[in-house]
Amino acid sequence: MPSINKPLKIGILSAGGDCPGINAAIRGVGKTAIVEYGMQVIGISSGFLGLINEEYEELTEEKLSGILTLGGTILGTSREKPFKKDKNGFYHIDKPKLIKKHYREMGFDAIVCIGGNGTQRTASMMAQEGLNIIGLPKTIDNDVWGTDVTFGFDSALGIATEAIDRLHTTANSHKRIMVIELMGHNAGWLTLYAGIAGGGDVILLPEIPYDIKVVSDYLLHRAKARKPYSIVVVAEGIEKPKKERVATFIAREIQKHTGLETRETILGYIQRGGTPSHNDRILATRFGAHAVELIARGEFGQMVAKKGEITTSVPLKEVGDKLRLVPADFPLIKKGRNMGICFGDKFCDQEIV
Ligand code: F6P
Image (cartoon, rainbow, N blue to C red; front, top):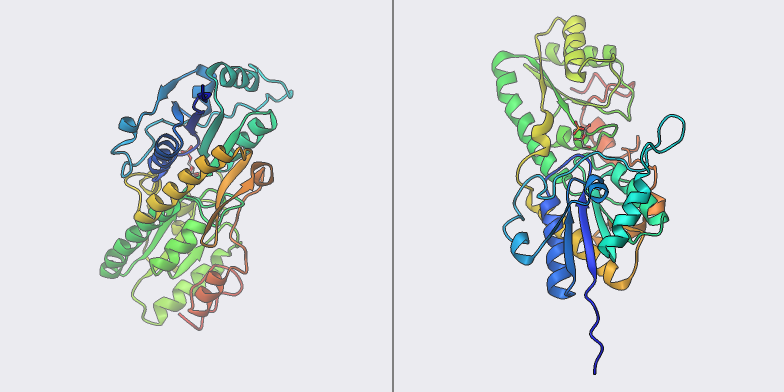
């Protein structure tokens, strides 16, 4: 009698802030696991909370149909950090122990964790606790170390670029300065790319300290050079007084220093909502399928990554606490400077507007 192997049972969860493309990744994992490898796929609700509270639902092929284009996550998400200790270095409830217990009781052979930096850190700690974990990097911030790009970023870039495009016409009609604040946490990727794609005149990133006087002088110079309006694209992570929104602060300071009429726009969560772009659908599908291939090969403790055109993986313990920020010498910044875009620092050339 040939031995009948029990199918592998894999769990999948999404944690941290949502973004477009998570459902495409869940579908990529689930369909590859079921169709190609005959695995059983269990959806875990609300990130790591679902593992703590034992909230699961089997993801059949039927349940995975029709979700490719959906924004958000069918599994729900949370910012639960099970390894976070209290200020005395203790666990109020030993959540890591609970997670290990529930993992074993459920008979998981592996869990795929979809998330940004915080999620990959937790995933790495779970792997160090002996669980079979694969990380999938998603976030509109694009700041996960170890991969060239995360899914969610391209969709957010499209939304942010369209928003800047729309500001141009109203700014021109009123001859105003428009300040738009974009998300990105402590990284400037979204602001840099949307700023360039949307034709921003000033782009302020957390990675490049700015001087409001430099920004204001540049805008005054533009006004004197008969440029009827200006677009200032700012990242939420730049320096500002506590409790104030970046765009509010920057718009007020510009108006104060230049006397030019200035308005602010805070794009907010619109950047994270809605259907994923085609690039994100493809990336998330590739990442999801690759995660299952790693599981089938028994290669755990890895985060799926894109390096150039290759889908590959990096050890989760290397991703750890690192952040992928925009390097000061990033080529797109240099190209922008050479076109006269002001990044708010001493290299801002007022002669080229
Ligand atoms: O990480 C994604 C992100 O949207 C950041 O750009 C932003 O700073 C943060 O999440 C907002 O977090 P929350 O969903 O907790 O308000």
